[in-house]
Image (cartoon, rainbow, N blue to C red; front, side, top):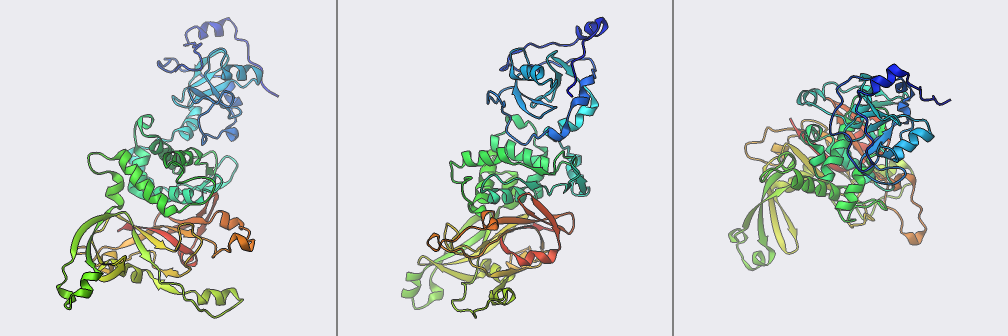
Length: 482
């Protein structure tokens, strides 16, 4: 049964005279000044933390306005303003819900009396709305990874939290998980100051990452709804909600977009982390055919940066032994080692494309190497190469494999492995029906701590052994330099 508002006696009324009462309209900002008194209130025990969810857009549930929004701490609904004639004011009277928090200033008020309440018991709510991290917190964050339970007793792991899928956006979820586990980018987003002054994409992505790494969550999952909507709008529909898109294209777009938004002078934490350089030698096939001495044909040398190394899989065999047994089918799938695919960039292998012969030599390895396994032959992902890529998860000698001068002893460990599930589908003419997995085809293996691995598929998070990483079709890999 809802509590009735207590009628203050003369002493209580006298005390309220010293508090800042604000009858502001819904469009004003009532938080310019701060009250000086420490006030507690009997209504605090009506707060229901199980009803609170701050992952969604700050929008009034009645007027749909996004200005001066307050959250009811009893039912979790959002309302505009707190002065008389505002939706929050009427909600406090009609539903007898009296405790509200401003989602920008984090000040808590009791309505309809309109006085501010300050109590340490509210700090956990404020931390969930706007998690903040000091430099010291970030330095220790990988050392204090642990298992927690939300208010409903559901377990979750700090930094490895499931993301709610909005329609067909598993490709966005895996890229958010990827960026949240590239340490320099993650640390930058965790400690970024003046969020209100940042571009919308940076601000919303930062908030998702902050909540993923928050140690004391009310819920075991996160809805990246605001960040997803900003990606759709900013990309002008290139990445949408109605169908799955290529997560690698999204990753490259995100890295370039974030770089443009946060760069200082000519560089940014994004490019400093994932961008390397390679030298490209190019010959024209026609010139080589006309010259008897191929060695005498001069190459055009150019230097170009790269954000990822695209790995070409060998073509799928045309003829395989028919089999109805799943294990036999798996045995028929060709396999290739990661080191073999990397030979494309070792400075000695030549590649012929579009009448040109090119030779790639990596000259500068970044702190984090992104590898893109090119599994799809068409843009719409209708044809998939099922070749299995074999790789170790730690101490891969990229410097030696790529013959990088001065970096032959450099090794890397795998931190993220984005995979694709589902085999080659039939065309619509065949009447094929998408399975549940094919509607959400992308998931990620992410590493926590030294050697703890988790499989994250939208909301599903489960620990796995490192040996499980080879059983799925790797599509994007992120390697961290030791």
